Amino acid sequence: MDVLYFAWVRERIGIPREKVETQAATVADLVEELRAREPRYAAAFADLSALRVALDQELTEFDAPLAGVREVAFFPPMTGG
Amino acid sequence: MDVLYFAWVRERIGIPREKVETQAATVADLVEELRAREPRYAAAFADLSALRVALDQELTEFDAPLAGVREVAFFPPMTGG
Amino acid sequence: MAVRVQEAPFDLGAETERFADAQADMGAVVTFTGIVRDLPGDSLDRMVIEHYPGMTEKALEKIELDARERWSLGDVLIIHRFGPMAANERIMMVATASRHRKDAFEAAEFLMDYLKSRAPFWKKEFTASGAEWVAAKDADEEALTRW
Amino acid sequence: MAVRVQEAPFDLGAETERFADAQADMGAVVTFTGIVRDLPGDSLDRMVIEHYPGMTEKALEKIELDARERWSLGDVLIIHRFGPMAANERIMMVATASRHRKDAFEAAEFLMDYLKSRAPFWKKEFTASGAEWVAAKDADEEALTRW
Image (cartoon, rainbow over all chains, first blue to last red; front, side):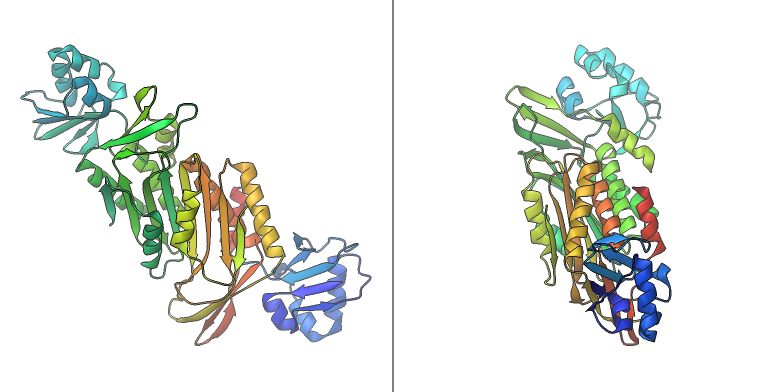
């Protein structure tokens, strides 16, 4: 699945997107896997309350299931307007 | 004092403004005097709840005193915007 | 303080551009434009707006000052036409600038609510079936209770 | 449906004029324009807006549809820029048209409230002392509870 990072999440992880092979059932499970990878991921995902997630370009929650999802995006709260 | 009429008040009375010599103490007293003049005034002032009044270009109430006032204006509720 | 009462049409695009351009350090600009609507089922020939020269300008300046007391504003612009106008012509506009959007929006709504029922303008609509003064709406008077 | 997400500047005056001109039988047009503010005490070199191509357009279209379900609206326009911009440049605008001013105002405020915290844009400010991502404001999240 494609995993995308925006704003300071992108900066901390160092890349804007990557392919991730995972059996994670939920977003939270995927976050656990990513955190375990490297310190830069652990840093980016240190505080989930400061993060938002979208599945296939729809905002959702961290307990959402990943079944059938092609694109996951992590980013800070939005600041449009 | 100058008495001004606007919108349908002007149309019913037939003139936009006139000089009025009066000893009326309040706007309501002046209205009584005008009503007594001619049917067109009686028609224009038939229903005070449908009218508004300004003294020297400031909105006010019908019980306001006329002492020192130079310009009285009668008109229907405003419809700007 | 920018209040203009005029018979001539105004250029909405140019006024909006100039207003926004003149703001320093204001993050939010709101405009409202009032347009002559055609009448359902009774085609509007024209609308004529009567006003009370002198009082109109004072009333609008007072409304602007009241808005400035309530909100933190940059520039404020009020343009209101009088005289004859056809369907789809612009009747008036207000513009407000503020650091924050909430102030700009609320001040523009406040200006409009007061301008509707406290500035001495009267609209008359002319159609094939005659001419009629537009009646003030209870809703417009009630809108003032919000402030 | 008119949602435009673009890097290029837009012409506020021309957009406003064109928008108002396209309305048939709408008495009220409201616009909001967001402008890059300079930073108090720390001169802004530039702001850069990042966004999520694809999701941005979807989110804005969804916000417009939500507004249309709540209010009776004519056209709606949302233009939002991304990329670098300097102080005093226009970031975005929304415009709403309705028969009545209340609907046009409320819909514009609703669009702005949702666009602020539900459309995937992120602002970064660059000054002489460094670069910083703009933090979301609690007030912006709270603004959504109004609707």
